[in-house]
Length: 402
Image (cartoon, rainbow, N blue to C red; front, side):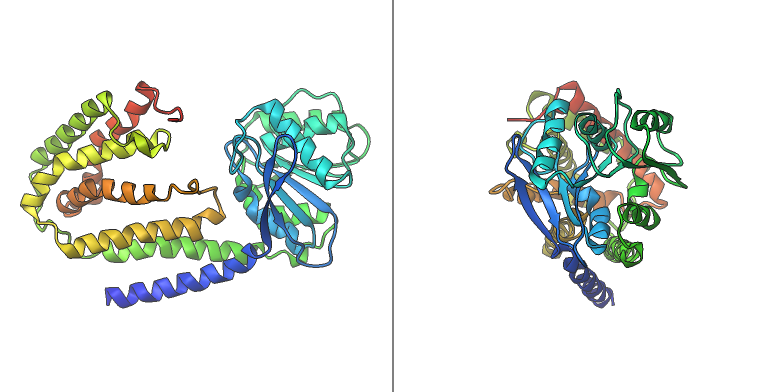
């Protein structure tokens, strides 16, 4: 029954991914041949072609985060370009605010003076800086971060903020209106929304489309959201189906001994990692340390877990399929909403990380999953995870490893 239910869920998930691929077909990758070079997504117009639109994401974001908005604009016939700022997404240029501003100006030079501009947070601030130096026909600012203002040279400005936005942002909006002077200025607060969430709200996207002169009735954001929610629900349901089976360890170990065992394993991993990060060759920033720590803690627990429940070949198969499932979900589903990629020629790291996680995963299966209720099992993991997250900062491993 479990197998057939999984097959059904995978089939439904495949259909949803295929439906989403139709939207992905409207999107092509490119790089603005400017200084600095800026990667972008180009969303082809879905109807009668309108003006070009440049979309600029915020800090610690990327062009993938703006996909839902860009697809909505594409539905309405806009020719949309969503760029990566330096230090974000596919950009190979280190982040610098001045360079980021130049990247936005260069992108607008490539697209032409009639290009409409949308910016979120830091991206909105960069758009305001550009509008200080040159006229922009129409501007949409989503939760613009405060910045010194002289003038905003645009005849049409729409500012959207969230009801629960950062306090300084709604306080900054009147300064934008003053700097804009005369012209068509509109500000709107999206209810039940924070700093970023309203960028995914269908009504907010329709408001933007209408403001730019498009037809909001053709926007299909609700359909995309339903598909995304169903995909995420199935991604959770499939592991839940298999986790409902009998755990490898049929009996619960003594609470005190179990807690001491995990503390001892995490302490041993802590001190070894203080001397050497055994998986530093992965070159995944602080993840080098995190995966190394998990591997060492798992190896310390593995002898005891093997004595309690021998590792069967079937469990290895399930572990491999689980890793494949996670990778496929990341590549085909999660990557549609966040930037997720591995440099060319480095895909072997997925295999290394999978193998490194096996010892602790098996030990958790044997020792923790039989524990009920679940919060007691989570309590055992607390010492391990606390040590795991403290070490990178102590040893400066949050910096890139070259």
